[in-house]
Length: 56
Image (cartoon, rainbow, N blue to C red; front, side):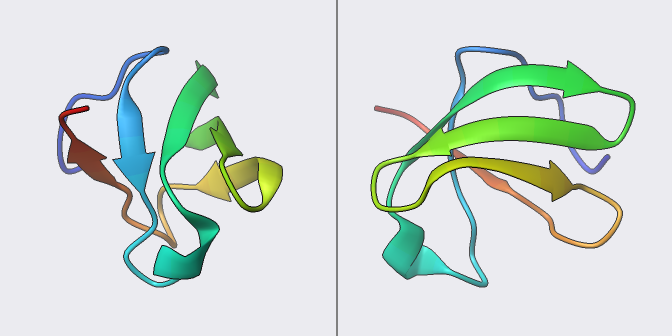
C-alpha cells in the first residue's frame, strides 16, 4: 500500500470520483471496505486501485 490507511479515514477513488467521498469500514490485507456516498459499500483491492486519503 502506498500510504497508511485506517478504519474511519476518508478517501476518494481517483478512478471513479463520481462515487463521492468514502469512509473506510475495515481493512484485511489488501482488501479495503469503503462506504461511499454515491455507491454504498465497496470492497477495493488496493493492489489494483489506489485510494486517495483526504481530510474531511
